[in-house]
Amino acid sequence: MPDIIPIAKPYLTEEEALAAQKAILSGWVTQGPRVEEFENDFANYTGATYAVAVSSCTAALHLALLVNGVGPGDEVICPSLSFIATANAIGYTGAKPIFAEIDTNTLNLNPSQIEKHITIRTRAILVVHQIGLPAEIEVLSNICRKHNLALVEDAACAAGSKYNGKLIGSHSDLVCFSFHPRKVITTGDGGMITTSNPDYYTRLKRLRQHGMSIDDRERHGSNKIIKEEYLEKGFNYRMTDIQAAVGISQLKKLDWLVAERRKIAQQYREALSDISTIKLPHENEKCVSNYQSFSIYIKNNCPLTRDEIMQRLLSDGITTRPGIMSAHRERAYNTENATYSLPVTEDYSDRSFLIPLYVPMEKEEIERVILGLKNILS
Image (tube, rainbow, N blue to C red; front, side, top):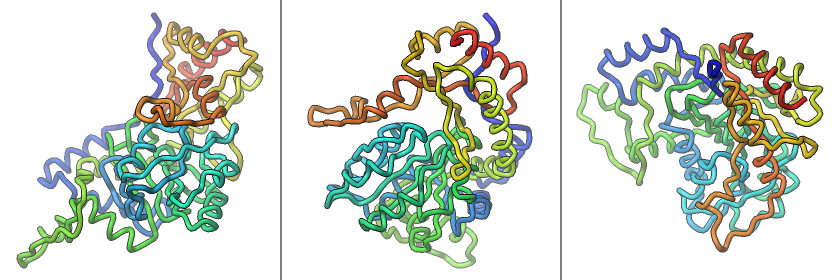
């Protein structure tokens, strides 16, 4: 069997290893000075006023919803076409996810399908920038203003992506990022929330650390005894300084990583655009993707099923993954009382798959993926 081409690989170098080592040897390994530095760097990069580091993007989404007052009995509109963490974060607050349909081209929430789901219980819209392509933030923001709803961005996959010429992270008051190893930059795991709202910023920092009134650095750096208070029920959603040290190094490479990913995506586009049985990812000047993943949709005129294509590629040593899941069909949400009509979501989920894309990806690897697809689909 030929060498395996993985679906993804994190770009980690000796620079990240040394950064983690320095954090370990410093003696301050939990939330500390490197976390604060990473937060400041990330806020400056995205153009947001503040950034709050947390343990995962799921934690970020949970806290973002909480500071918007989402709670038991509320409803939050979101796509089903997303990793289940999107819906789960809504459930953590006691609210109910209301799944809305996606756009056939962007795979993001279809703005025209949202208002019919708004009720007196609707508190927020949770939009996902799917696999790195920004959603229509401006249109969604207008809907939220019209109906007095909060907008939360699930930007788990969208670090380095742009909407209307600005980096994702500064368009609205609560934007949540992931640093999982499958993302463009990684801290092993971890997340970040960007905001320009000082009240959100203060409460987010408190909630991530058990509701404590002061942070550890303030307490340890004081020459007076400080006794903290616990102002509300919070969570242990802290990022470690080891992770943050890696993140500081990774962030410096983000623009380069996005540029390299876009080059690979363009090679895929040029080589595969003439295959009539598939549809390639959508993009335009307004919504610029970081290509966290490259998705291929199998049209009805293809004689092979999605799974058959994936199996043949795997036999050639090329790893793929099924398209994005549809959360409403998982047992956690597909209950006896659940009724959903999401044909576009289900069709895309069933007829799409992701192909390898990572940095650095050797020329021979790219050519193998292209040739493998052409041999199967032509």
